[in-house]
Image (cartoon, rainbow, N blue to C red; front, side, top):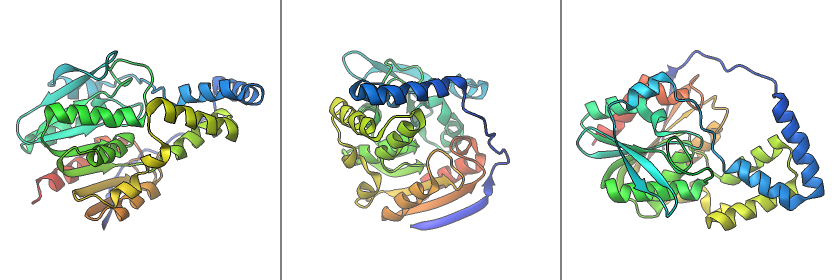
Length: 295
């Protein structure tokens, strides 16, 4: 692993701290009560919260990024479809967004990649963006990459953000062929985030455990099999890992751990960009293009 720390890849906006809304306090009180009285019901509730992405308003900058895309629909399963977007011509780079994200979040990378001679493909994962469905989880996000790559490949590279980065690693493990991969703020283990959500909403440890079991049964993958670092150790592709030192959603230590485990990985540390602004920083885009065009 090569560690390239660059303070120049920095933003200047500090996150504002806000008090929990009244609705969040009510959620916590309700979850705490149900956890004591009906733990199975609370576990089902926690699973729903954990597997339901938030669909955020799409800012104007993302609307502009998506304006030049060609869109088509792809069947994901018997009940849901996902939209697939395409720009440019050349070797294909697949973009994979994170949980509660959308393809348009990755849009700042499109023009630099197309200008560098790549064809860019992105998609909204199930229950995200314009895709159909309400709930999803990491195993389905992995399957979405596998499905899109199977139709749109062969791939020159996959660029994944957050849970999309973790999904990219497991898609490579599942046989998706890509010469290089770019991982932006990759998380390591889904159990870490289930615990974080459980604590936030006031669920007990017992309810958390039951919710995890429900998720594993529903999506067919054990959390222990979805740890990124052990898989990273066996990867042959060259990787670029970018992570902000102040990321409040996925700790920097997670990205560093993935980069240290990956045999041929370069770690780029940014400052001041957080978890999402890193996706629209011009210097980050330039580093990705330089990595993908390097022999």
